[in-house]
Amino acid sequence: MSDVEIVTIVIDGVEVKVPKGTNLIEAAHSAGVEIPHYCYHRHLSIAGNCRMCQVEVEGRPKLEIACNTGAQEGMVVRTQRTSERTADAQRATLEFLLINHPLDCTVCDQAGHCKLQDYYYEYNAKPSRFIEQKRHKVKAEPFGPEVIYDGERCILCTRCVRFCDEVTKTGELGVFNRGVHAVIGIHEGRELNNPLSGCVVDLCPVGALTHRRWRFNTRIWYTAEVDTVCPGCSTGCSAKVAVRDDQIVHVKGRLNTAVNQEWLCDEGRYGFGRFQPASRLHSQFVRDGDYLKELPLEEALNAAAELRSGKGPQSRAVLLSPFLTLEEVWASLAFAEKVMGLAPDSDSIAMQVKQRPLSDVEAVLISPDYAPNARAMNLFGHGIEGEDWRAKLEARYAKVLTKLKHGV
Image (cartoon, rainbow, N blue to C red; front, top):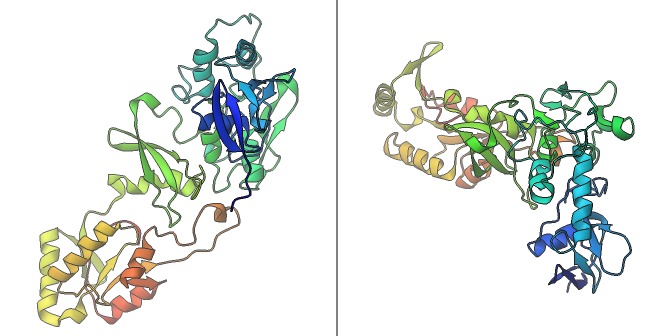
């Protein structure tokens, strides 16, 4: 029996049942109502500093921030959709945020999926009344090998700071100076180089933090986004890949609370190049003395056939990559059986399985088993630990090895 107390609240005239204490942003979301926000993120602590999520709660004299207001029985809430008071407050918040924000959407990488841009058109869309000189801040400051910062675009939501404090616990970032002079910065002697550093770009609701390697790469509206699963390790993080002209141009985490929340490690995010066509192995090799000689597939198969007829099954072996899918494993086993004469349960068919030590930060998301499908091969009975495959191959005098895919 659950001890969670369910309460009924009313949001814009719609009754919603949620666990007691659920913040109003999540409660409204469950009813299909979006309350605009910048600093709030469901997997980070509450900061309450952007003030964009203000709502009107019946019986309270002041507007409340929805991110830090818990649902209580009988609560009546009015969002910007039904309360002009709330809508006016949100328009004012947007106007203040835009006072010193540069109007460089035409060259900003975040254009097209920028929350400041989206909310302006949805909730404000009025010309600026600010005629004074905008305040200038640091531009294009590298925070680390992968992330670059633009202080003029920053709205100080502090999502990036909280991520480094609470998730990776590396604490590289902080808020420096006060008032209109405040910026996000790196603590002295540090750089943003933790294994999940790219997540701060995903968290940034504007264009203040961008990927150095993808800077000015392509516009989001020229890409097609596809949901996928990261093949970098056995964690299997949910990811979203942006593709243009059959090339991967951007990778980010996708919401999956049970697996990776919304995070993606840098190895999975930036290591996509190994899956591009230029990085894949398309050839077969036959040993010629101390060297491997590249041969067309037909000639390599003929060489394998000669081994099959000359020295028997003990002279042949297949080494599979733990990066293969189950379908590819099945096709490989069929090839080994029908072409090379090896039974599916033969110990001449093996997949290398490696474990690696992880730091505390890496262990937040990364699995020590970096092969995404080694578990399946172990279930097939073809897993080999560590470097044992080398000894196994040498013991069987294997002369032909087809590396079916990257990853060994």
